[in-house]
Image (tube, rainbow, N blue to C red; front, top):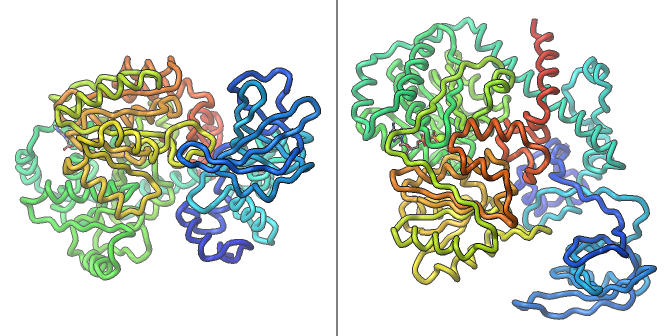
Length: 639
Ligand code: ADP
Ligand code: MG
């Protein structure tokens, strides 16, 4: 069954779904709500000014439309409840004009202002009897929450068989829901208890797939019959290293030595290269590639985003400019003709190093003699993706890079006995980043600090957690860009970057920033991973409390990459204690330990940005006990 077979999905909506990375009906089924909205009636007698309320009542008179500030259209009507009368207004919902009529039951969700005014963020037609749970999905332009839930409902109501790998023994052992019920409940919860059960079931499934995947990978690596040993001339590597514009740190050397031993060994390498942001993992990985290439093999490096792949490619070209190595890039954006040619050269063994995104694991990529597979920011990839890449050769060594320092106690379980090399020391000459917490009421100070940096001809990142304003008060990228234009636009160049821009545009903006042609870059967290601009000396993070500490630390790692003093400014609505740990420590391990031990709910952005191995529901710190159980279960299957 295809997405286009689902009732309601036509060509236009299909394209929008692809944007959300929903490519198949299974993707759709597993496109879980990122949060839920529980609608229950506010106690009208007790509401105070500025409070978010949910009020059900009936429309008194036909609504009217007026124009608010910046000529935003506003719909207004009067809402009657048994006890009170409210004046309700709502922006951007003028389509309701002809839907609301006197006597109609509606539920209004919004902010209450004394004496009897509600600025509604949502208006739902209907009555409210018992609490209602609404699923909220991440959206993109021209796809509504309603669209997504309609499609899922339509799909569930067909006879499509939902896939599941979880063995029946485990379902019985833990008394889990069946997959059909779980999927239905996670999208359309009938009550909170069923929702919880559904989440537990689907978490088990995720953990099982993950653990099974790495167990399989480990088994195939550890029991491979192929001789993987690579013979290379270390003198050549040494002279290459001596030509580098900097001296390697002790930890970089040490990691390399460990990698050489693995490369020479008959058995495959299965190693994680762990190091804080900016610790210099990439150059270590490139040198490992060089050794492998000297031994007569091809190498490939897979990055989670196109931007990163391009950056790695540019760096590799620079780094290897003096040695005779053929490097190519492969992403979904490479033109078809060029791609064909690159694929041909790879298959013939005429390319030594291929850098790319997920495109690397496509079936049409065939290597002549692949010897080393590297994944950058490995937690961004699913296990099956890593497995796929490593299957592209018989004598493959595996090196994964990660800047998510998972505390040791967890790491052993999570990585299932992978060997680990750590880079703990930072390259010399780096100064610690100065971290400052400011509240939104102190924004003027922040602007002043920004002005100081700009005056020094340094560049600045400004990060915001949201793209579209759903019901959040957070400035979205576009608004923030406008504000920054007003503040700095007459002297400095301000530009914005977010996930929904076309990728050519994204690359253009990023490369302009890299060249120093943009002074202030407003962005969502897409800059979180890997972007390396030495002249950027300040990062301002808006709505900082919405992020997990590890994410904030990763973001902070975007600055302090050269040798000028750098600053990280965390801006939050109200002063927040937990951010102090970021002032106290610049050490990713300390921060992640703290994050792991303290993360309750909190991280609005869920798992995706919290460095959790590409899970949709699982959070390895919160679900650690479950992880351990599943690991044991899976291990039993492999003996
Ligand atoms: P990460 O570990 O976050 O991937 P990178 O490999 O991107 O870090 O390194 C960050 C920056 O530090 C790069 O510009 C890189 O060239 C530089 N770098 C790496 N190793 C050293 C070193 N030993 N001395 C000085 N600069 C280094
Ligand atoms: Mg990196």
